[in-house]
Structure formats: C-alpha cells, structure tokens
Amino acid sequence: MKKALIIGAAGFVGSYLIHQLKDVDGYQVAVTKMPHETIPGEGFEVYDLNILEKGQIEELLAGLRPDCIFHLAAQSSVFVSWKNPGLTIDVNIKGSVNVLDAIRALDYKPRVLLIGSGEEYGHVRGGEVPITEENAVRPGNIYAATKVCQNLIGKIYTDAYQMEIMSVRAFNHIGPNQAPMFVVADFCKQVAEIEAGKQEPVIRVGNLSAKRDFTDVRDVVRAYSLLMANGKAGETYNVGSGHAVAIQEILDKVLSLSRVPIQAETDPAKLRPVDVPIIEADTSKLRACTGWERQIPLEQTLAETLDYWRERVREEA
Ligand code: A2R
Image (tube, rainbow, N blue to C red; front, side, top):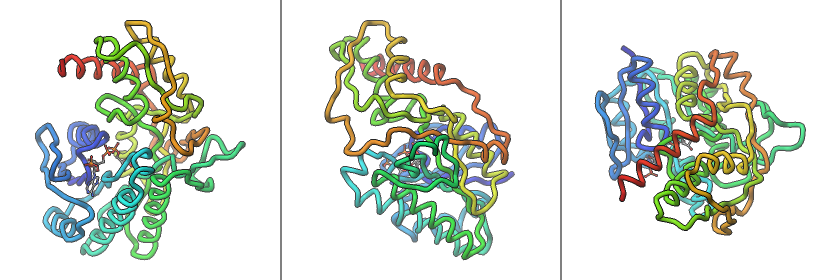
C-alpha cells in the first residue's frame, strides 16, 4: 500500500484530502498539523509539525519515508496577507523551501504536489481568459506573490535536483467547513445567523463585481490525487471549474436559499486594497493529463455549505 503524507492537514482542504486518499484511493495516510490544532477522524497517523522548523521536517520524513507528499501548509488568506505580509512570506516561501530542501536530502525521490493558487495570475488582461498555465503571472497581492515564488522554486528544485515535483494553481475552492474569512462561507454564515435571529436581516458584503472560478473542494482534492498519480514532474496544472462567476451571482444564489428576506449592504472593512476583476481557469491541461471533470455543481455546494452553517449556528445556540 502506498504511503501518502499531507503537510498542513488541519485546514479546510486537509480533511477532504484525507478522506479522498484514505477512503477512496486506498493510500496509507499520515498527516501533519500545527501543535495547537486538532484533526478529527481515525485511520491515519497524525504528527505535529511547524514548517518553519526544518529539523522537524527532516526528522519526520526520515522516519516515515512517504511515497508521495501533498504540501498544503500555508498562510492561505489574501486578507491576512495584507495585514501580516511578513508571516505570509515566512510560511509560504521559507516554509516551502524548508519542505523541499528536507525532501531533497532524502536518499530516494518521493512525488510531491505543491499547492499554489489561481491568484498567482493576478491582473489578468482582456483576451487572457480563460487563463492557461502559460499565461504571465502578475500577482496583485502578497499571498499571490508568495505562491508565485513557491511555484518558481518548485520548478528550480525539479530541474536542479531531478526531483518529482508538480505544482497546481488552485482556483477558489468552496464547501462545508471553510473558514468564514472566505466569501462563500462568510455569506452562508451570515444568512444562517440572520435566519436564527442572531443578526439583523442585513448581509454585509465586499466587492460584488469581482468574478472568480469556484469549484467544490471535493472535486479539487480528487484532482490533487489524480495529479499525484499522473502528473509530470516540473509541470504546473490549473485546478478550477473553468467558469468565472460574479460574487454578486453567488450572493443572489445564497440569498435565494434563505428562509427570510435579507438586504445587502457594503461593508468597507470587507473591501480589499486591490481586487483583481476576473480570474477563470483553462483546465484543458489537467483534463488531458488525468481525465478529471467537475462533478459537483455550484448550486449543490452552496446549498450544502448553507446547511452546514445552519447546523453550526444551531449547535452554538
Ligand atoms: O494557520 P493555521 O494555524 O490555521 O494552520 C494552517 C497550517 N499552517 C502551518 N502548518 C505548518 N507550519 C506552519 N508554519 C503553518 N502555518 C500555517 O496550514 C492550516 O492548518 C494549514 C492550511 O490550511 P488552510 O489555511 O485552511 O488552507 P486550505 O484552504 O486548507 O488550503 C490548502 C492549500 C494552501 O496552500 C492554500 O494556500 C491553497 O491550498 O489554496
């Protein structure tokens, strides 16, 4: 049985990737988390790891000797990256170099998937949408800049040390259990709280004109697993739905699922210093390499995410 290691598995994507690898694809799974975090579930090994501590990574890898490594650990919020650029650069660049360097020192070559972001393309120009992997990257925020660096360094390590490293640029992924600093989770949480009478019937929103490419997180982790099995070292693959949707449309769809009437109001605190107007993936390369297709429609994800927040609000009450 092949052994998979997920670094940074306590976050949003981690729980779904654990399920995909362990229960669907039949891997033996080991995961890491930060010491303060917990990961519910069983049937996998759990280790504490801070990727800023290179010695910890070396020790873990020497003991585990995984066949493949999914590197999820990151400061993953664009909003936080404006507030704390130094931390974002430390974790996403220095932390990733620590991971790659510890892997380089092994006496064998595990396969590695680095998780980047559609945000890397940044200021996309007219005629560049849908965006292929060959497009110029013009990052518009600190988070995106760190993921561009991670991608470049991954390619350098692949070429210089003949390592088996692949990168993805994941566009917005959504679903139950996502932190409410991300837009879909934020909208669904607010609607659930309004329905429960915990918030006045006004939903607070940021920039509604931005268009983003949303994919259910379960489809995203299926793509990661397929790329681990079939991807080519040194290559970057877009992972997204291939359809950009305006945040306004997401808001309208979520509000249409509400059980009570709700007004929308702009909250200046939710507006970012720079917003990129449209980001949409060309997923031909992923589909050609793996046969992946999106399986879960946007409406289903939104309905399930809202139900998740209704349940959470009920539990908290
Ligand atoms: O920031 P925390 O305490 O929530 O922990 C996050 C963890 N993490 C770290 N792990 C090891 N060493 C560090 N120095 C370190 N700093 C942060 O990585 C969290 O548990 C995990 C990332 O999970 P999320 O923030 O929920 O990201 P998500 O949505 O699971 O995305 C996975 C990957 C990331 O590379 C994103 O940038 C990309 O997909 O979109």
